[in-house]
Image 1 (cartoon, rainbow, N blue to C red):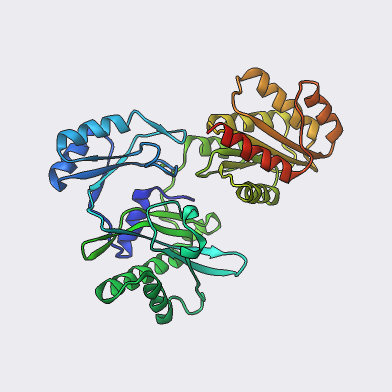
Image 2 (cartoon, rainbow, N blue to C red):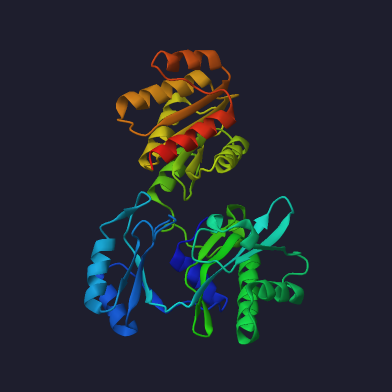
Length: 370
């Protein structure tokens, strides 16, 4: 479960990780009151979508009047398909340098991994591999002094700053383990004068550990599409890319995401319909995909229990009912594959047989629509 920024920062405060002073607000008047108290402020849309800055979801104000105007503008926006309702209004930081710091799980190594870079404030994927620090953490030992020394050496931090970085990493690791997180990320970790401050927060909690996290926020961090997907019984996750992915099974879905990444693309979301989804359920899943306004949609169906002709009928039904303007790439293989292909071909639609081919086409289509 992805926490919104203000929720992540609440966790940071619980673990004594420094964050900017701020307040969650719902009205422009409340934004003015915070600006009156804090001075120049940053207003940040609280939506479960990435790249808010590039999407116009962050604004700055030097006066309470400017804060009102900025809040009014932000609350008219829709970012990543989410209407902006709540804003985090924080003191505006004067940033001298930005770092990246995160803890995640390396499934291949079966242990946590520390990720860091002196190039923070940008997408970590955009940072050259040679500039990314990766240090695996032994879960039985936790953060050891040699890890801190190595991190500070490679980030060129000394003296009091190295002590601060060590304290922040140690506390972030406590949060990561005690909160059953899959990801605890600070980007940027801002150097403001002689202080390191977590300017942003991204925390993802392992859904399978929710029974241990009884005080997790519940409803406000779920988008309307995620809620609709839950009601339909789909596994649906919002991501930061521009290609909507629908597949039928966890393995094939993850493989599809990997192939998109391999070809230089990124998923906007993914929806796992599971096995045996009916024509009606598949059609509703497609509608959900279209609602996310991607640049391309990739359907990757392996027909086991699911019938390829059902998927083809569902797609044709949605295509006829809705004005689909984005390219849709379909990969069909398995049960009733021939019948499904014939249905699509009768409408001038060619389905791929290979996953790799379909992923490459989806990435190319998304780039053309950029």
